[in-house]
Length: 257
Image (cartoon, rainbow, N blue to C red; front, side):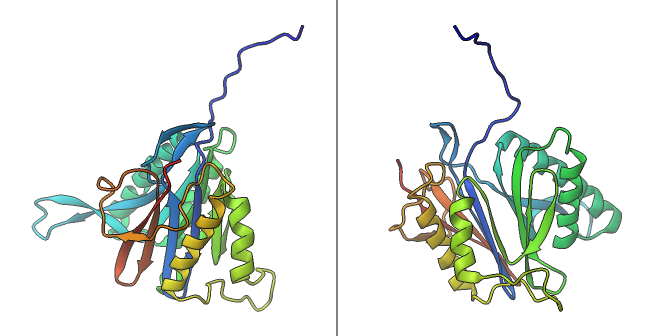
């Protein structure tokens, strides 16, 4: 008879998928809102996209309010407890940076900070797989993709999560990013317009949902804009678009099974 013993792991995988696409003057980041473990759905309304906050003071310095960063956002899949701890650490480091430099951290600087933070924890890593997207100092879209221990690369598009093995071949076929080994280096941003990139994100999620139970998007439902997360019920796809005018969000309703 085989001897059995109790096993415990400090990690879990809560599923979900994230996608980011960088354009000439925009960046699109999207993720589903289902959080699950195994075959159990823990919640259908959990945002995997972290909007980094910064403090903005009035001229009279009488109050301070939190405002959403207009430069970069991060989408994360994996173990959501570790993701939340990572987000808190980055928010604290971002706040210290703002107090010291009196400005927001740029997207490339935040990308380096995220890499350093993940590498610092490499012996007991954050079990999170991240995509960071935003606008660089020139106003161009940029996407940085990571592994769990901080190795990262600037790319034109990327995907992380349980559906990434299904989504990346689709994006490779449609976008064909140039090799980083080519000299002179070519720009990694995609040639698509902003509406085309948003439609492509919806299409890849519609494809992945048919074969990944942790990523659930109904392919026939239309996008819903300017709705609160509290209004919509059930699984959703959250799409965040960053451009020179600020941040815009769209939601695509998801199927309930």
